[in-house]
Picture (cartoon, rainbow, N blue to C red):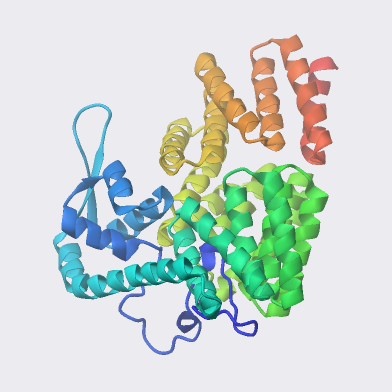
Length: 475
């Protein structure tokens, strides 16, 4: 994020792709900090562990002020490079401490002087904003806006949602006062993203729509693209496929106006995913392959885990044998990118293919690892996906009571998060289990309910699958 956000200069990057202009024009060999500059928080965690020694997860998150997602991504990076280690403590519940290796300590000690200087700079910016805000002098309005952009982006990057939202709302107010629609749009975009993350979806749709309108006025296509992408993801979550496709299409067109290949390709990935959920599997597969090839061409390492996983999902629903290969590629790419969330999604998806291949032990191991990661990150929808796959796995093995318990857990999360696609999926899979157990009436009732739910959200292929199983039951 630039400290100055003039209309002609603004470049707003979502969390998964924030990067400096220098990284776009890097020339010559890799720079020294290439492996530690991402993910956000890696260097901060390195220095925290130097000062505090091996520390438990909860203590680190609380004392270092790190968001769990930020913490786990940083740990993955440091341990993969041999700069940190994880050690389990004996006892119950099991606790894990993370500490630095000798190499990690040496690097951290060398960085400490610069870190102290930068920490002072960060505090100085916070203090400057507080001082200027207390005076509320109109002459300082522009500086306050620039500081709010910088500090709100910092908070959002580190997962500090509450202070980020407060700064974003204040940014919106001051930018409107100063007649700076670009920065006002940016403030609304950040606010809308945070509302969406906190499941305040009706508020998010209103705020993001306002952000898009303001960004069009300001001729800032990157902000328009991001606002439309977030709107698309909100409608996709609700199962409103046509609305989702419309917003993703606009997001892609605006990315094209901005000349941003990664943004544009991400929008096409979202379209491919929605096509698969609608049941247009052949079209989804074709578009997925194009998207994966484009991300690989662009070297978009942070985008590949999601793209591989999404392609694997479509291949799985088509019954293609290469589904497991794409899921394993997603896991490997997520590990390279130090992205535990996407690694967990890859593990969850791969487990379904492994279960079909009767590799039950490996599938169960994948799912428990994924579930533990999602729990650690507070990712409730991910926990539900792992629970659903565990339920199916246990049903395949005839472990009925364990399957019922995990179906219950997945269904509860689906209802709490207002996810109709997941609710319908739980009903369908539960109906399949009832069929295997010989509970014909229960199976028919569940499958009919699932079919109606899939039809209501336009998931034609899933509804047809329900009908197929119902015909097997009713003749």
